[in-house]
Length: 133
Image (tube, rainbow, N blue to C red; front, side, top):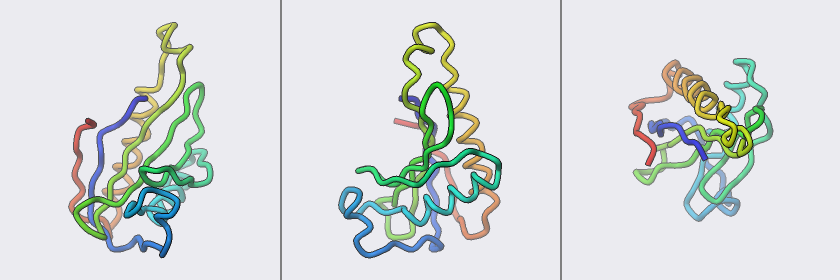
């Protein structure tokens, strides 16, 4: 798996729903954020699938071949209006074996689009970037 840096920010614009974390780990939210980001990325011309729940948060599938590309969204540990997002790619084993892996480039381009969307959004405050673990 290839992963971008983590973008962390504060925003009260993304409400959480009762029981939303039944689909993720307890206390992990981000469905409204993921749905909003999916809209923003669609508006930029990216092929975006339906938002899906994972144990670590909510994922936005992004059309890409030969690897699978996603945006992950989750609430931060600091409080109810703290959020984290990052891009990641899975798959593409054959491309990696033959030295034609484009997942690093795909993740970087998606990360740049995410960062720009968040930077241009008035209700996003304190945007900061943290290197991937």
